[in-house]
Length: 292
Length: 292
Image (cartoon, rainbow over all chains, first blue to last red; front, side, top):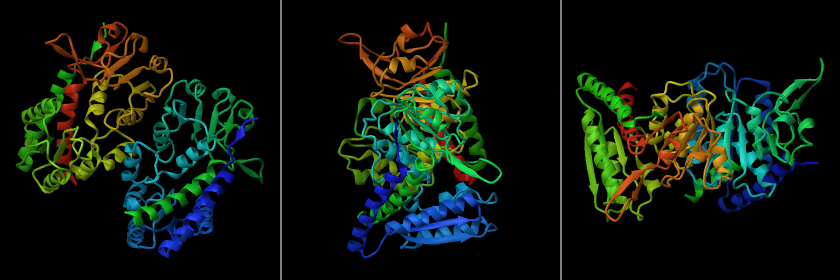
């Protein structure tokens, strides 16, 4: 049976360590890191994520500033709020939950967050620093989901150098930063996507397969090499019947699990890691402010 | 026989177009784009590059500001100069020729250049924008060497979508931005490097092979698929005998040329494209300033 990469356990360890770190910060600075969580509108999934992030932040001792704006909020109102948060000394990290209403330009909004408060790691300055930096080190604001995937991989205590890593998906939120992180771990990195020819056969060569494709249970055992490590980034809600639904990943877990050496489940894999990494980035932002 | 990707000819076309564009700019704005070229010390290769860049810039009508500082220049003196150039309205692009003397931190210096005057495209903000932007469009400051490689590929008038592209090398100057550019052209992109296992066999699967490895004539026909397109980024000077030397690429041209469908020679391939792209970036910086 494969090693199940238990994101709940690993994220709990990360949060336990952050809690201790924040207690030390409180003792030393007489204040704690602050995270502003901004939601616009009422997309159901966004509300679930915001609630989970807020709860986790409070658990580790981060001070949460909650802003729930109505759907009709316009772009300049949102940017006004971000400017205030940029200038608020008690706010170390700012998270704007995506997606935003269609009337608002996400890129303009994300770029208005001060790079040093960019808890999601989406600001172009942080994206550039991630690419340029030779190591995946503590001074970087790293996008939370790919960083969570990397921390799961590190749980295996294997040498990543020279491993053949394939990333399915080329989004700015997951695929591209994931490829950067793996390259810095000295993996050989291939990015495949919707235009890739023979995608299955390329994936079947992967020692490490990161799946961020957005299609429920799409990747089956024919995509996977025997003994590979599979990280499933997908979170898809599918209907079981008229009344019930369940969360599944992009990987057909029951089909693949017998073939791999390690795999992350959905739920309980990458999801909780993403949240823990947001808390890590917020704490890192606090530390960078006071160490500089 | 393969198609020889004639960088001299393609770069001349690019420069001819830039010359016309700059004449139009002069007519419209009564001024021309300005490029500051900064060299510290007397590394022989740097002097050759600086001379070639200066000459080409003048040819297309760019106003060149030459700064040749002595080897003993310290970091704060250099940054003082860059600050002055940042504030100089006649300077649209700033190029600091690398490498710098060991007493100077290159990263700190490059980051002190205003992103909107970053003619080399090395500033982290420009690196991030390149990664995030969905297209390789005219608003980006794109690192000159990989951009030159892309323009050579475009000369072939083939559809790049779905092509299997392999980039050898993961430097910030060539390999990483090259991978970003090819990904946006919808290639499937693999980055291989010194830690890659079975590097030859991965390269042998490439439809497009970009070689930036820094070893003279290292890649022979066993690395190359029949009918592939090969772009050779290497510029290495090797000794023929006690008195004579010559420039060669990273590819053993005479061995590979019979097997490929297209290949860039050294010299006369990527080299002149790099210079033309620097002029393009300088002109783009001027246009962005006046169109915003």
